Image (cartoon, rainbow, N blue to C red; front, side, top):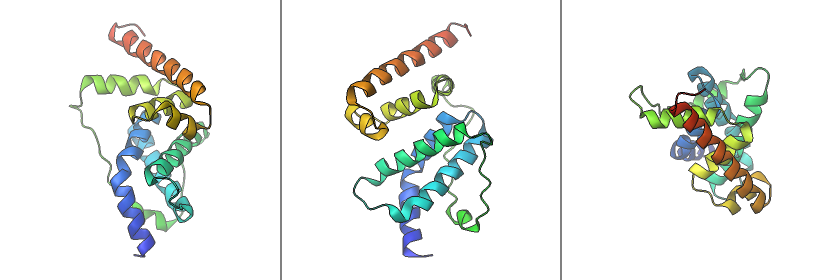
Length: 169
């Protein structure tokens, strides 16, 4: 294994939770989550040689992961049939939640899954404690626009959760 591969695996192991969260937010069934997880990992690996370290690795990873998730969601096939043996070297263990997961966490993920792709990204950044300024920079919009969009996304999320908890669908 080369030094580049080793360094990549170390960074990915440290940040794989981010990829898992994005996969869980954007895909509602296990097979699609695993496919998205693999696709994000592959896209990060492909782009890794261009990572210059001008930003934190996690920031760079978030951007690639969210862009990949949005494209994956929009693609007609929703599956990437990668025919590259190199990918198998970089399989990471998924942190999986089991059936005893707290009900509220499941409700939150269910509600997030009902959001559109952009709102999901906003909520993800919010849950990762990004400031309005950081969200704006990541999404390429103004800080005011980011805050307005985030507030609207949070309001939709509240409505989805409240609707479900009151038995209304």
